[in-house]
Image (cartoon, rainbow, N blue to C red; front, side):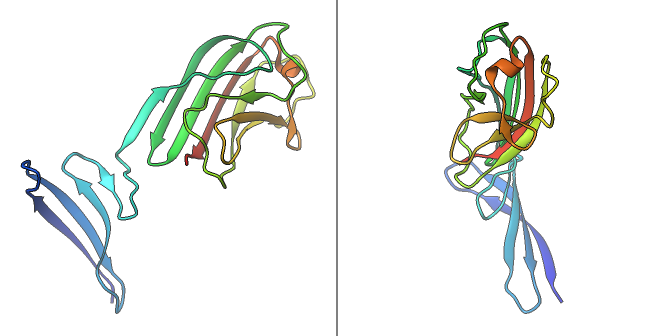
Length: 173
């Protein structure tokens, strides 16, 4: 029969005492393995290095050469471990779009090399042919592309004089 154990550990290294809770399991016939710690600071960590309590929040500055960004009402991110969630809301200047595929640059963290992440998009536009719009963060990059229909690109002229809002979650390298 497998077992589980929770231990309270008192540390006294570096001149400042601290404590943590250690969560361990032992499968049938196996050895005791630490699965997680809750440190006195509130940080939750796992043996493989992800600290769940080591979150970071901030703002970022989206950029795009396919149209002019008139204003940025909001551009925020939250990073927990290596998981990043971005939120962006920009207003696009009228008659500034070109025919190139829309790529948003300036993401605060590059995506892992083998990561492909898709998020939701909301935009005001006058072109009724835009269906299934979504944002994609490509692996190994710090850019996001706006896509439509069957993963085809959206040109700057298709969302000219509009707002563009998206949320996407990806894993940073």
